[in-house]
Image 1 (cartoon, rainbow, N blue to C red):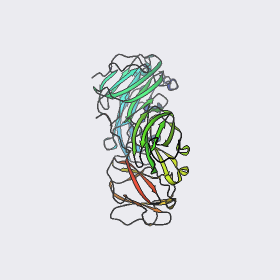
Image 2 (image 1 turned 120 degrees about the horizontal axis):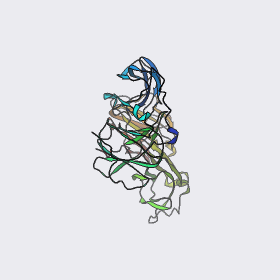
Image 3 (image 1 turned 120 degrees about the vertical axis):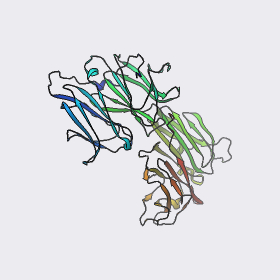
Image 4 (image 1 turned 90 degrees about the horizontal axis):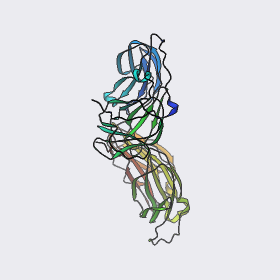
Amino acid sequence: MKYIKPFALTAIAASLAACGGDDNDDGKAYLRVLHASADAPAVDVAVNDEVVLQNVSFQQGSGYLRIDDGETKVDILVAGTDTVAFSVETDLMDDGYYSAIAINDLADLDVKLIDDTDNFFDDDADVTVVHAATAASDVDVYVTAPDAELGEPTLDAVPFEADATLEGVAAGDYQIRVAGDESDEVVYDSGTVPVAGDVALVAVNSNKGRSPVSLIAWSATGASTVLDFSAELRVVHAVDDIDVDVFANGELFIDGFVYKTVNGYTVLEPGTVSVAISADAEGTQGLGATLANLSGDLTLERGESYTVIASGDSNAVTEAELIVLTDVREATDMTQGYVRLVHGSSSTAADPVDIFVYENGTAQTASPTFPDVEQGQDTGYVSLAPATYTVDIAADGTTSPAISGTDALGFAAGDVKTAIAIGDSSGLEALLLDDTRGSGME
């Protein structure tokens, strides 16, 4: 089945120009390899039992490797071991060019082989599009001039594991957008990208940002990831007993923000956002205008999600602070749960704290899992086997929990959560946030 509608396109970057082939290079073929399995560990790649690539991680890809032609065995090995995760045999012709993509989830790992030879030697700029994102079912792909209307899909109803080539393309700036089949909801947007030369665009899973998909631009010399052209911002109010207004770039962003409230993810353009927080104009606190220590510029990188926590105590506003975190939006390993613990309390009795994490029904560990955690610090995301856990947050050097609501935290496979310790000397508690997003492409 054809998925192509007529369109002129070239590569993603001029720096990704292909190297020339050698018609007289008898007995040799050319093979490049890409790791596109989101939950698979780093791998080594062996050709005819000789390791040619080591420690290749998800979204990393090689340029063309010069190897012997003829019957060829390609083994995907768990990095640093002799364990073969997948093996494929194929016949590579003399002076042929090929792409091998490790594709699908780890449990169903496969290698997709594409013959690039005709494209390589046809003197045209060609773009090969590959659907390797298990997070998406059939998709429509739109390739347009920047900011143009979507119109009809360039590639219509592309199923998982399919590939298609756009031939005879012209250099210039383009915008690549992906939507579910027969849907006008764009779930991936490349923004403006310069293009020139042969390239493969491989759609893979993304655990960052609003989009479940990223594109890998894969040239003759290597691969680079093109994240969705957006950023996400979530705001948490953890300064007790103050209602505040939050402004972004001089405009009201959150009105009458109440202690313990979470303002969910808002999609913004990447770039610098000036954040200012002031006592709510309709409130009665009488604390004045902008709280300078709770204001500042945030740099939002494309394809990333952020949580900003206003942390502090109304009795010591000048000691409050903004905690800025970069979030993960989907589990890397869908058999595990993930949790990040954040110290967002200004209580002097909780500065620092020791954190103990252990499965319900077992004894508290002898030593803290995370010792000496201070206000503003976090543990990073920690993977946990699916179960119910106790998280004891205790004053430094003690073992008795100083916080409530953390004695039965359930984590299922695929969960990604953030737990924030908040409060002052009158008592501590936990805010539990769900960081996961739906794929939007089911």
